[in-house]
Image 1 (cartoon, helix red, strand yellow):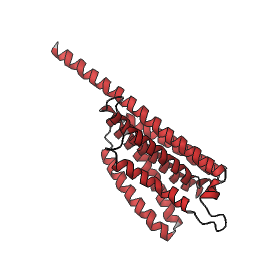
Image 2 (cartoon, helix red, strand yellow):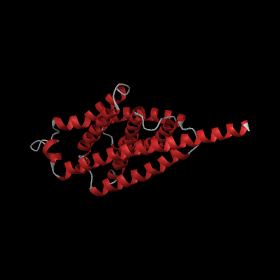
Image 3 (tube, helix red, strand yellow):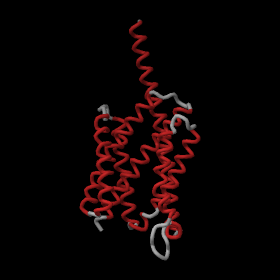
Image 4 (cartoon, helix red, strand yellow):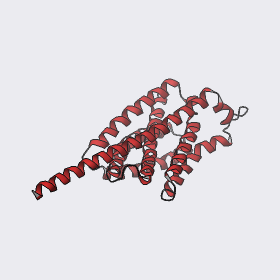
Length: 242
């Protein structure tokens, strides 16, 4: 009888963990999609209304304006603030920062509509969405521990960031192509790794608490960055073929 009760307790604990993980991941993806929709709308509006030329580029010289650099580099500041202030910030403050970050990313990404054709942007977006969806399912369902893979991918990410800085001065089209290919591979793998990581966090989280909400928002930021970077690297590959 005692063994049966222990077995039932284990079954109940596993079921509860699955329920918590599903609830947590649902919140993560909800915040992520909210951020992506905000970014997409702001990006489209800036480009469609012509504000991308009015505010991001000097109409006479064609050079970037100060707002261009603010929009390009400010999102990094928001990521750092959310990361370093995670313990002190409230869930509401985290959400405001995340939405402000997504808005500035929209302003920054509006330039892609000037650089690439709408066909290339659409193809890259749907390709990134498909790859992201598949890898998210893989990360959520696989029983293989992806921790070692994640560590390798993060080291690869640091390597391509260094390569991108070097290529900023070299302006090598071949190096740019290689960086884009590796970038797609890295963020494809990171999507599965991050989803698995967040699922495990969700299994140990208490539903409805402020702490869990903060974890969900920060998790949404991770997946948002995975998707955006996957999209941008694919866009460089697709647009580079023209």
